[in-house]
Image (cartoon, rainbow, N blue to C red; front, side, top):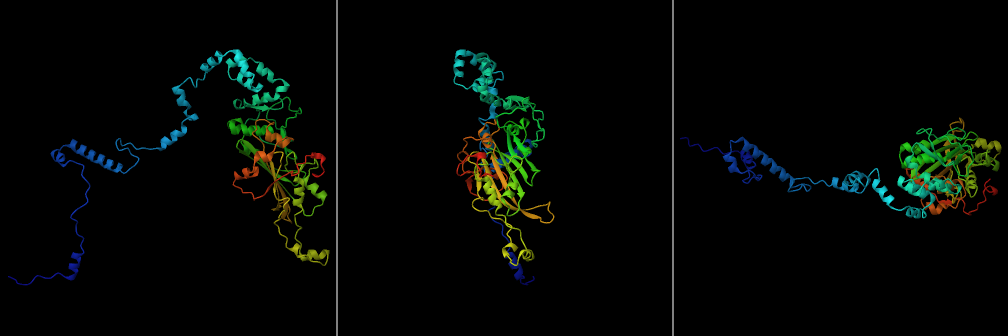
Length: 483
């Protein structure tokens, strides 16, 4: 025998053996859900194999669903509360009317026979006693509700509306029919519905342009109802366009036109004034903004200020103003703002032509004009929902090849034109006539300008809101301060 001693392992092999990962005696195993005895008995049966595989997948899915809080443990149904929450939003709304009609057809019976029978069960004397507590327009609306009520009340309610003293009640009754006549428009001159001759194609044009929206035999007759609002010289806003915009907003596009179709840009032929109008609907009221601007020279005399601000046609301002512009500080503030326009910059050579003196202030003129505490704040007319802002801007004149940039006066007007139902409403009538309308009590703290500019994301510089007529003097054309 060979007595050679065994070879000792090297240091590297011993380190490798010591650092080799050892297998754990207890392995983590998933709890088996399959009965091994049943599996051993039916080892060769294909049906048992399928049932075992199905049961194993079912138990795996149940184990996974145990960790999901939205799964019912007993039924395995996934509980989705989104449909439940959305279903609560439709409960009691107009979306549930179809289901209500299926459950109780008499509630939404198109014939309304059940309601007619209930109306016919009441005596004629009782209905006439009810009509004593209603206005003439309310009685006419009640008679218009159904044939049964018409037979009970008779046509006397409609005949009474044709009396001259009931003209206001006739207008109220016809306005209530607005939602049923998309192809017609109510004419407030003859208080009759006329068919629209330009349905869907109505466009706002200049006053001198023939633009009939319907054919009215009394179109040339004068009326005391304010059917037009003066915007600028040669441009007015007929109340029919306010009707069309608000009808489309309330009932649908087939009833009128969108407010964007009224926006315009135009220039006054007799002067350098340019205008831009825009409209916006807020809380059922049509808001108007008109921006008017014109280039102005510095140090104008009183005659030059009048030539710049007033139209020689009717001595109204070139910019847009309400009917109360003569009472207050509107024109005085415009003249004050024009007085802040600095003289143009003059070099040393230009100054030496007039004399040996040199003024360094004229050499470095600031193009940004700051207004004073009188003409800088915004003004609100106390007699109508109208606000004004006067600014002096440094703008480019593209028509002048020599002096490209000039100072310009910008007058912005914001007005609330009302809900468009009738020209006798508070806002529209107040902007055109003398009424007892109190704008500060009606509008409140937030101005019309802030509401209008908020819809486009434009922030107006913070200004104080003062009264256009702080002394509340109402002299009109008899006063001499406006000219």
